[in-house]
Amino acid sequence: MVDERIILRDIDGNNIPKYQKIVNAFKESIEINAYKSGDSLPSINNFSKDYKISRDTVFKAYTLLKKQGYINATPNKGYYIRESKKKILLLISTFKAYKEVFYHSFMSYMPDNVIVDLQFHHYNIKSFKAMLDNENGKYYKYIVMGFEHPEVKRVLSKIDADKLMLIDWQADLKISRNFVFQDFGKAFYSCLQDAKSALRKYKKLVFVYPEFTYHPYESVDYFNKFCIENSFNHAVCRNSSKLDIEKQTAYISVNDRILNTLLEQCNLKNLELGKDIGVLSYNDTPLKRFTYKGISVISIDFKDFGAKVAQFISSNEPIQIYLTTSLVLRESL
Image 1 (cartoon, rainbow, N blue to C red):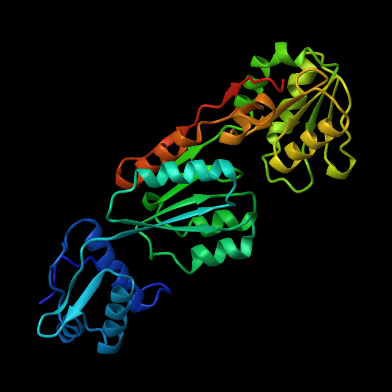
Image 2 (cartoon, helix red, strand yellow; image 1 turned 90 degrees about the vertical axis):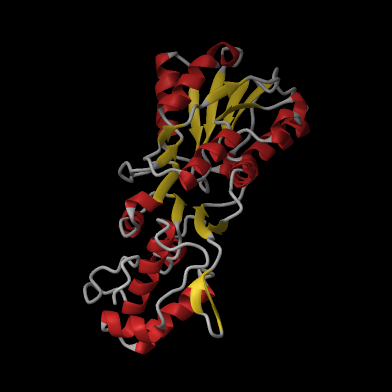
């Protein structure tokens, strides 16, 4: 007799192996509490007979479910549902200081029955595809930091929209059902407007956009717009090897490696930070609050970022949030 708790659809359709369809069906049943901890599964023989699927296929599915921690087996009892554990994929670009703040905040909201698999794609499309193409269906939910590449949208389209959240940057992706994004354009421009009085102390503004950064280029466009509208002498430095700081110039840095270069040159040339030159950095970190009496920043609150993304784990309602980007003035500007 067919077990009505099992949501098994289109067993003979599309290219997904039958054993994987069985695995996905049991996972979905567990997620909606059709199956609960301790419930028995149909025996391999009964499942094979009821659904007209080979015993080998059912055995392979049960073995994979056991390996992934969803079910267990004991003599004389057969297969049964283990204590519910939900696996989450958190796929981000890299692990920098500000992302560490986000991660620890996110993890602090995780319930005991959630396992988070943290992975990094490093803006490498082969790694990105491998992590999502091969793992689709393995996770309860997917939290993904995308980037600009024509293949990214195709890979993400294979994931159930209800199980996918995009974070940090919209890039060239369509608006998904669930997202928590920064605004690297208009919000950045607004922060520059807030910093205008401090920036007026300097004769020139330089946006350092190094060749190795993946920071959204729209920030450069809005920097140029701000400078033109407010009559600032300005330039964009795209070659880090040619960065040579000048007195009475304010520098905007979107990369912490460049920030270190600016501070080192300032020290070597005996220039006073916040007076001879200005520095405005992107993305706040605990260290920036105390370096050189404080580095001025344009940033979101990464603790709040983690908290808002964590809401996705327990919510069944769409989450669509643009984070607040703020200016924090310190003595470097």
